[in-house]
Amino acid sequence: MTRQLERAIEGVLETRTGRECVFMPSGRFAIHLAFRLLLSPGDRILMSPVEDDTVFYGALAAGLRPVIAPVSTHDGNIRVEAVDDATWRNLAGVLTGNTYGLPDRVADLRSQCAQLKIPLIEDAAHALESDIDGTPVGSTGAVAVFSLSKHLHGRGGVLSLDGAVSRRDVTRLRTQLTVPKTVPRRLVDRSRSVARGSLETLHLRRALERALRALEPVRSEAWRVPLRAPRLRGAVSDVGLDQFDPWMETGYPDYRMPQQSRHLERTLAGLRDLERDRERRIAGVRRLRTLDAVAPGAREGAAQPLLRVPLLVEGRDNVALELRRRRINVYFVYDPPLDDYSGPEFSEPSSTPEAARWWAAHVLPIDPHDALVISGWKLAREYRRHTLVDLRDNRDPEVAGTEKS
Image 1 (cartoon, rainbow, N blue to C red):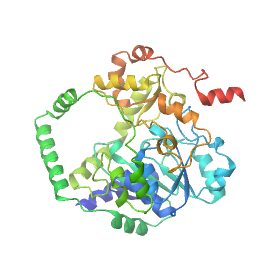
Image 2 (cartoon, helix red, strand yellow):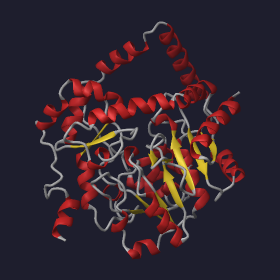
Image 3 (spheres, one colour):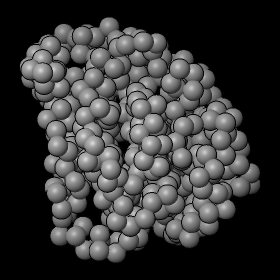
Image 4 (cartoon, rainbow, N blue to C red):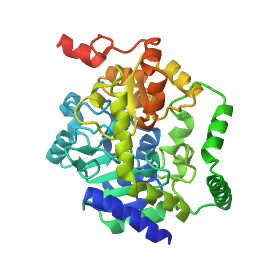
């Protein structure tokens, strides 16, 4: 039964991407496998400074040296033209970010990778529903990684393959690195499933979730997991996931355990309802586009079904705290940038870090599903209390640099 559900999930993504797909316990597990399959310990990989913590640690666990790219304040993605020739020559691979579902400049990155004969790996965790001129994100790189739990009420991830690696190699490594679900973990999952089923039968689940959120203490966020440098120093001395579980397990202690059938059923149902979710997300994006604070990359062109809509505001942490008081959670803030977060011991810093620092300090990602609620309490007026960022102002380092040149 479980394998049939996994195969059905793979089939939905194969139809979407036109490529062979393999189900994974989680997206973070899948991206570590991609690193292991395409690169070797000691290789240097270009990645965005506003990437997820677990992607960074997944690269370290594969023995890689993250090289931090410059980013654009236009959309928070890699600024391809700002990567210097010396950096390109020493890379063994490139990882896209597709921040909040806004597509990277994949054509330019693919062209560079083709010239250098290195693999392009697509991190499509934020971009399950996004496309580039009708081509779905995740159908271009040597491999692409999807994280299903970010978009759906389900679990798991998917690795999409273009033939650079075989399904046999993928499944062999997946089997090698997957660990059994422990008895305590199974008991926790079972109790949650029973409680969820009872609440849904009584139509009380959403009411209870609201009540529980109301009881949570309102606090400011620490956006990155603690680095714990001395312990990390010991972990990087030995390639493998076991040493990195303390970082990789953040939020998902079962990230490399087999997913149970009830979770897979919800995932499959969500995938089959993706078109309806796409319509809801696009409607939310259009509503949020009316706010002055929307990042330029999210405002231009046809509305995309974004995972989050990036707004740019002064006093971002204060605004996020106000949203939490109103029981709207803020996720996917990657502050500080990875090179500031990890230091030169664990990554190669960007030569132009200012734009990433600016973006990380100002970006406020809003779920398109919350657009109606947010606009209902006149969010634009609330933001003006914290001063909207003006992208024409020289506080924006990318624009300032352009003007000076």
